[in-house]
Image 1 (cartoon, each protein chain N blue to C red):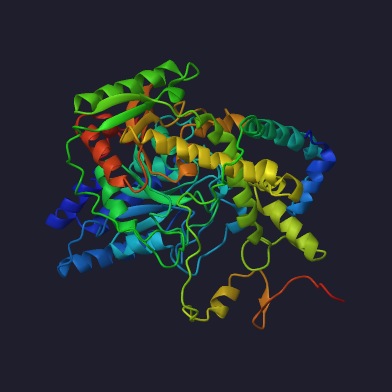
Image 2: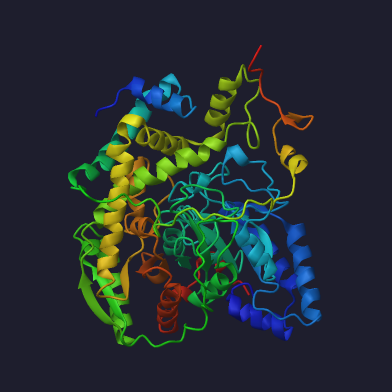
Length: 486
Length: 95
């Protein structure tokens, strides 16, 4: 049962062949049996989950029959959940219990979803491997010595290993798509502002967006239906109306023009990854799409621009952690200055400190124009590059990541870790949506293909991903850890 | 703009972070390699390009100046490491 997709589970719950309590208990049992090893979860709230499941079953017995009613979900531990700890993978917030639910959490709750718990992530979403968590690294179900990607590695690995039916993630530079690629699941980064950031703890506010990690594009569409839309509590959430994202899934791909950026398939790309993405392109061509070679000349500039803008915003956002109002405070501070400095030094991990310092430097009066302003100008060039490409194509196809999941501890220097996100960062700078879909395997490890569309074309991305999944079975493969599970 | 160990300590201080003496050299090396990656930006001519700070170029929305939130003082003070009599407690600032 726990291997089923959300749409299959919805049918099973609707016909009464399983109850939400039974389903929730099955996920809890599975978490208990394998998550000590895998570490996808930071917090599992069994009591709350079973209470919500009973409420869902009650509601169903009274005639309610919505798609997500009674379906167990996991939330990345960056989303505030009232009454359950929200840690951001940090010592700074290790005991923090939010007094309110994030809008994403509240909307999924209102849709009837059952919250199993909170998933592991790189501290404050800063990382690409989930190794930067105060609560220890998460392991990839496809290889226990491999990372699940990051920063939403707990969510992606939980979906892959059947530890939840679906999960939320956040994406600032690739944090939904890259772990989706590493764990063989479907991950959608919506357009900036499509999903409310209220209650989603901030990393880089002009880049952050929440979105679904799921077994299929169809499931991601169901989740997006629940979470998309304007929220008066987030002034950057857009007022443009949403659509029913499941409605366009079956549209044929005829007349679809898919751009393949030459710069993304350079000689530096692992030829095995290139081959898989080219096969994906040919599969989509067979479904009626036309392939077009395109240029994204400025794409190589995304990496440096991102590593100025994101740390600059992070240094500002994370200045709130000062040991005064909430979060960690050092023992026996000598004075106020000592309290600020020691609380932050002891409460933050190394990568977070590194990015705060880069951001602080980039925002210094004398360097502001050379770094921050320059990066914002390049951000416009990157966006224009995508705008120009979309004059001639409907979507862009590329690898999600240049590699499959690497071994724990393999990337020691920060810049080599930053290069993980070279294909995903530009999408965040431009604010446009992107999706990663399972597209093949290299040495037994999954690899995803990324599709990128213009603003608010999530429906088109989900349509293409769904059509691809109707004609491929990469997304149906299960890691050995899941085999033998009913 | 090569940095030295003193610069690293100064930047850390601005961010109210402390770098231990035995960590300064490694921190400087990491910082310098990140900066050299970032400095790739300087090879691009961006004259007359307007900076982009928000992907949709949104401006701050305004709303009516009315109270919408309830007073959650107690609930919020409960989150504080130290609080008393409706106030956050911090080390003495003025003697």
